[in-house]
Length: 528
Image 1 (cartoon, rainbow, N blue to C red):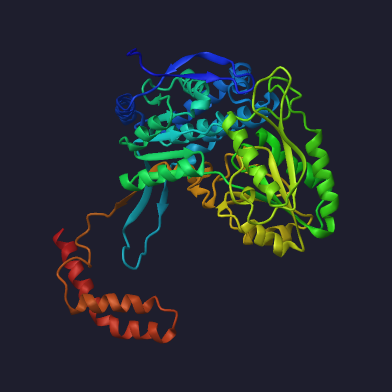
Image 2: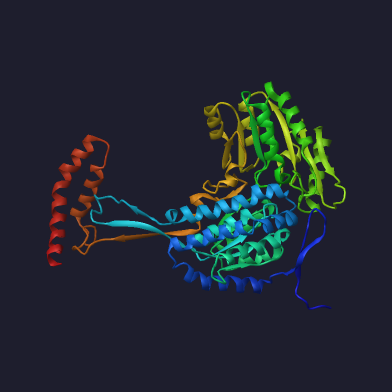
């Protein structure tokens, strides 16, 4: 029996061919050692000025630009995403995130001065700063293997933390390349560790002495992470995906809406967090919209992700295709109409391919409208009006994002207020994925916290309040307590009242106790 340590082999989903050399799987002891080393280096990293950390982010962005050809080829090979889409959906967002952190990160994390009540604390000066948490664990997704986890790693580093990153086993090579990007930027050795493995490695990392866990993945796996973080009283940011809805209003530009929704539903073979899975279209434009969407779906080229003209690549793993097939069978059994698409074979390739699927007439109890669909499938529901569309969109237990397609900005804003999601995009979809300045995240079953925007940086740090008072005697609210001090406190409260009668009473009843307290305080000033 071999005593060789376990390894993880990367496989191209389009061909089934192995990629690179097997990578060692991290044991629980390896994970503990990685966290310990990151913690020791982080103590020094935290002392760097924000502007210095920002320079590392800028250099990392340049490293992505310099290695763009290699990165695009590797992402396309390991994840199966069409190479053109890799350029637009992985490399550019990664560069944008790193450059945004370099430019805006220092200002976001620089802290603020705070004004305190002069009635109670006339001489106090106050501010708060943002202190690093320590070591942050990042668990990356399979379907978005580069820009999403790189952004989480970068946010944690910019905030002054060390990082231990576990990529998805379907994105092991990309995890190693993310570490290489930061190594090329000159990041101190040991500050960022990559640990490879399956669920057991992820469990060990979540249970390790990390200060925060940043997770992107399925609802099922995310629930386990949230439970473990609750037991360990650890901060957590969890992006659990969603079953995003699109609402097509009667005044929408229907051909444009169909084009945009086809992209939002079928890009990355429908595997992105926030892919459109449900469309609610107002009855007056439903026939035109459905015909246009089906035409768009049928026209998309399913094929080799290395081909720049390919628009739909393979799913990440055959188990995803199996689940898509199972959900389609359930919808069919319940009376849904499948207009196009489904599992297909691509000549010369062994991957799990699925042509874009458009469904209509799907009943509300079908699994496909209640569960996440890990593939290019969208269900179209015809509704009487926007009110019914909102109700349908909110029926899902998930709440990541939604899009509203309308010519009326104010109507769109009203609909946005009523949607129970974390993000609403009008006349586009997935806007926040390529705009790191905007928070990314959902509500309800779609997770906790935000992955981008200023709030993401600040949740990777601990606010610390610092105040200063001059050495001028003793504060009037210190001991000893007596009737005069109690009366002064009540007088101050009445003077803050919105009623004239209360303020007049505060002046009348509070004058004598306030003078007594003031005299006592002045005596301590003379002693000083």
